[in-house]
Amino acid sequence: MHEGPRASLDLTHVLYDDSSYFSLALALITLSPILLMASYAALAVQTREFLVIVMWAGQLFGELLNWVIKRAIKQDRPIQSIGNGYGFPSSHSQYMAYFASFLACHLYFRHRFASTGYSFLDFLWRMMVYAGLVGWSGLVAYSRYYLGYHNVHQISWGLAIGAVLGVFLYIITEAIPTRYPRSVFAEVKFNILNNPVVVWLQIRDGWAVWADGGREGEWIRWRQEWERQRKISKGKSS
Image (tube, rainbow, N blue to C red; front, side, top):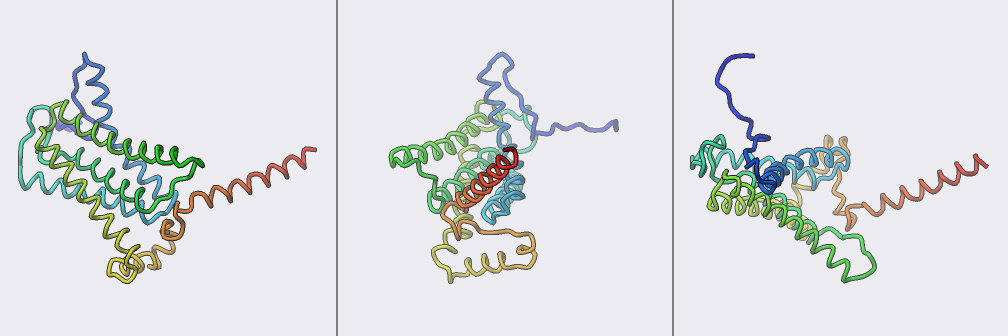
């Protein structure tokens, strides 16, 4: 191995109190945002949804924005010895606030949840989804404070920047084009979706056509084909 200066990869390196299960749990929670990048990639490839790709691009832009802000302000972490780089703003908090705000806007304004047949249960399920998004973001932000990587000031600004970025990006890419189809943002979105490369990649905007993004229709087609093949299989065996 080359003998030179060593650095810690903060992406997966977290210090916690080894005598506390609570500290261990928060250390695992603080690493949980890593799962989102793999999820974005899988969803983008599998669904080819414009919304997923835009949300993923916004997440990456948020990381770049955070990198620029940190090096512009150069504010130290509360405990400088446990983390590399600057502390303002908290990138984990910004990351999760962006994810939660963008997805919550989409779920509230455009996505139709599958109904259980009972309005109260439907409402309760939606509230549980929103609470889960907020709770996950809050736990990640708190883990950064508890583990000593950021102070309240750095976490609050991270949450604020992420939330503003998520809402802003949703407004210009989804809300305005949907409500004002003749606007500049709608024209830009149309031209992107109509680009030959995008068409070749079969990228679509499912929620522009179906209230649930086409999930129920795809499931119905699968169910019908699945039942048809089972009947054929049973017929052959008999």
